[in-house]
Length: 79
Image 1 (cartoon, rainbow, N blue to C red):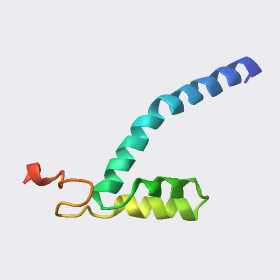
Image 2: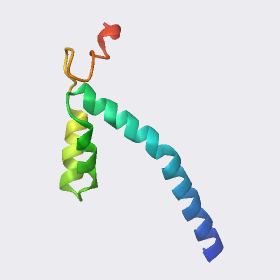
Image 3: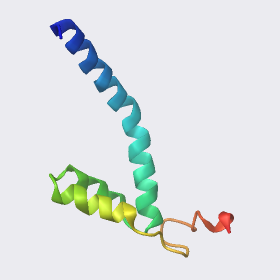
Image 4: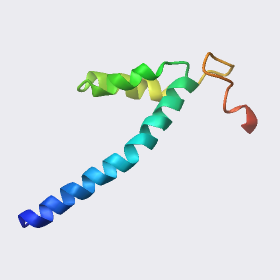
């Protein structure tokens, strides 16, 4: 690959990350709140391996079936 093509693909990747990051953070934040956890868990994802696994486990847990400090259960309307 020429340096020009490589530089363009790096710019495209950076633009993609910058455009999608806010929506990913927002969805992750809502999912953490659904399971009764604080948004501070997002910072655990910055830690290599262990932090990422901890955050992943928190995101895979089942949400609380009742109202929590972040609001009502969003799945109630499905039932």
